[in-house]
Image 1 (cartoon, rainbow, N blue to C red):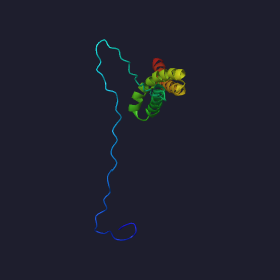
Image 2 (cartoon, one colour; image 1 turned 90 degrees about the vertical axis):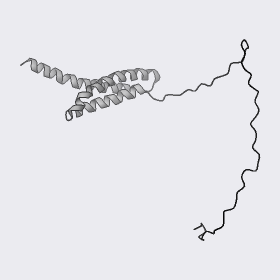
Image 3 (cartoon, one colour; image 1 turned 180 degrees about the vertical axis):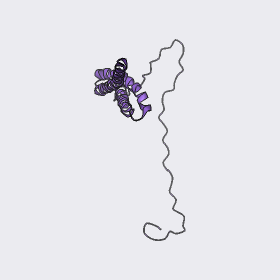
Image 4 (tube, rainbow, N blue to C red; image 1 turned 30 degrees about the vertical axis):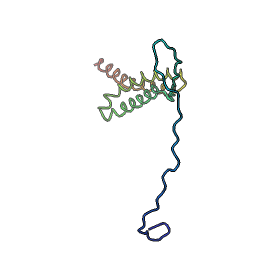
Length: 142
């Protein structure tokens, strides 16, 4: 059915002329001469592409590791496997958090994320050390 509501006819569609204007030739450039030993030529100017980094990867990594460390520590009381690897995330959060905070204080981007990352990392490590100290002290008094 056609847009006007009538039935389509069995006639072929009308032909459409293809490009009738001639194609323009590209502009002629000077021929490139081979470089001979001892000749001086002007150096070619190279374009430099600058990619601007809009974030602080170390600080983000520290924050993510800190969140994973605290989560694994808290879930570790229910799921033993996460408790066994949570300390590793805590150590990585401290390392990446300090590196990210230092980079963020220089560049002005992500210093707060770095601080949050190493604080979460220290809290995770503290959550593992304090129970061990309390259990060690109570076992020594027996």
